[in-house]
Image 1 (cartoon, protein in one colour):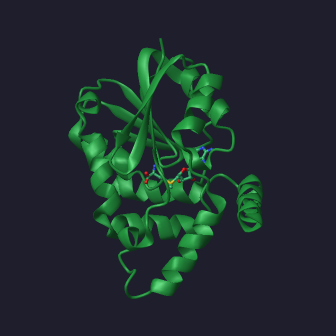
Image 2 (cartoon, protein in one colour):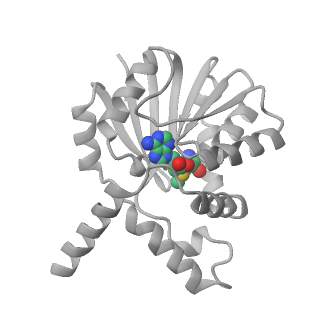
Image 3 (cartoon, helix red, strand yellow):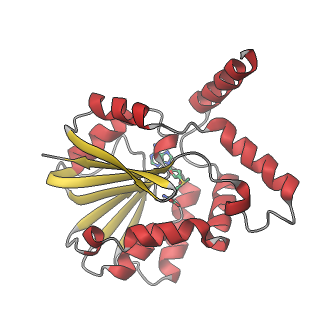
Length: 230
Ligand SMILES: C[S@@+](CC[C@H](N)C(=O)[O-])C[C@H]1O[C@@H](n2cnc3c(N)ncnc32)[C@H](O)[C@@H]1O
């Protein structure tokens, strides 16, 4: 019991002091893992191919876009949209720029360094907002949801996906069998600073935000929060 309380305290303290954007080293590791393992990317591809996203004719915002694999999949399956990606980590933005350029999609995908709380766009600018696996980093999720609300057009939706809990390392890391101990240490370090939400906590965040219409559903390894701006 005491052990659990200490663990919780350490996690919360680490979360409070750690910067939100992924650090340089973590950026390299994350991009490498995602590139080599199709366990996660197959779900990003499924999201990109959903009917609603394929029909968007306008501008999409991806918050916490990381290496930009999701926007690349979206741009490939829907040439009628432009995607603007915002990520708090400069090294992530640089890696994403390389990926977008390799995919020859620079005309469709723009990348900016920035935080979700202070999106440098006018009110009601975006037709759609999406985010995957970034919410658990956000120290002030209510402020983040309100900023998303501000930049979203009336009558439009934001989809926030996050994993229920950390994906087991053997699923995620293609080199798990070879470097098991190293992989587990990196995984535990990563875990120690992240807190993942349950449905109850998410509902509390939504209730405190400007969004008055929303629902949560399961989507494979993710929960999907649909926020609707009236
Ligand atoms: C686990 S990665 C997910 C990347 C990508 N969306 C994906 O699904 O592969 C989380 C990303 O969120 C970014 N991030 C964390 N806090 C943020 C914030 N407050 N505003 C914008 N981006 C943030 C991190 O820098 C990191 O690139």
